[in-house]
Figure 1 (cartoon, helix red, strand yellow):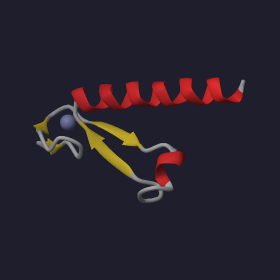
Figure 2 (cartoon, helix red, strand yellow):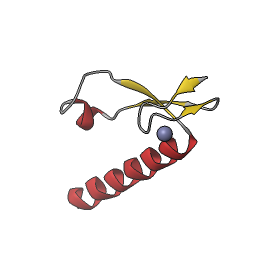
Figure 3 (cartoon, rainbow, N blue to C red):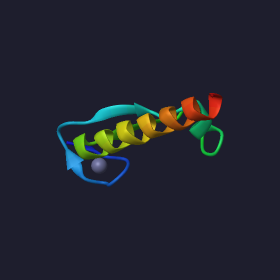
Length: 59
Ligand SMILES: [Zn+2]
């Protein structure tokens, strides 16, 4: 069993999440975490939101 670093749930399915560079500066460099299915989907959505926001800023 592996443990999700975000919600703490024990699960057989984990995704290795590499925190984005911009995010890194606020926390730890080269941070890698394990996320369960629900958390990985949430992180993916957050990443897409950030990408959208930066695209809009660039215009
Ligand atoms: Zn989780």
